[in-house]
Image (cartoon, rainbow, N blue to C red):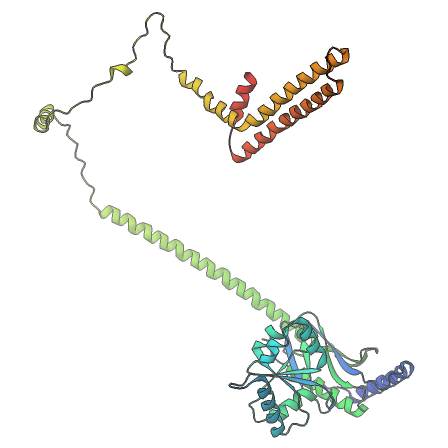
Length: 446
């Protein structure tokens, strides 16, 4: 976390007042043209920083002259009191605020009502548009993001935390309601904050601007003079500069950058040295372990090799006499390889090879029997169609010529269907892992 700036920015009050008067004159001229005299516009400060912040920050700025009028709508999210309904908790907190001396009492919404009535998306959008400012009890502040949704944070209307049990409750509420806040993000070097509105006088606007710039410069988590330029503007006007920083502090920034680079280089060197020392220690430890193992192997006694004596025949006979002769199974005379007689064929060992084609043929028949039936039916129909068409053309038979043509077309359809069916089944069998190319080769040979 970077250090805060200790010195506040010194604004030229004459320049600020001049910019405010020019802005008011511009707004009067535009409002007279557009007939918008009754509406008030927000006056904002546009701050440009020297560098993009490394972390997000929210700065609360108390103002001497409040931004919101008495008619401004403020909503307060409270926790659910034990043994009380939603209406009872609402009455309890409104009574508490009146007893403390708060003039403008905000709208109170208990946490239970927020979870039930404002659960749909449309209800949340309606709630967001009905109120200008949202406050939340510090005891339920961390539980709110999952219930209010992301639109509160996108529209920069996230609820502010309030301690309802403090003794300075009224002062805290007035400071939050009448004050403003600045959201500093990591996405860019520019940020905007509301400071006043067009219904104020020039002196009030100047006082708000001076206090806001002083609090921002003191609370920003950046080193040195971090603000580059400050502009004053409204939503429709041109930005008027009221502060521009000099370049005297750039040397300090360069020195800090050099120090940071040197510190990074020193850290890298330290890491390299620590790695080298760790590797050396590991190598030395491995060498010591190897020496210890060698010493232990030398200290161990080498066992003497004793030749294994082959057992004598006498010992074998003595063992057989004690256990008895073992029964040996008689060989089957039927399985002996006898020489064939004259006229008999030799039982060659190639018989199993001839039997290898049997399962392949069985597999071929099981998978391809349907297309075989279809192709045979198609062939018969083709033959009958040819015969009938020939005899019908010569007027030998009484069968009409159209029957022959019908048989020919039907037979052709069956034959084509069967020929298409064969490769489909073959691809299917290949996908399933069944190898049937042997069966195909046997059929082609036949």
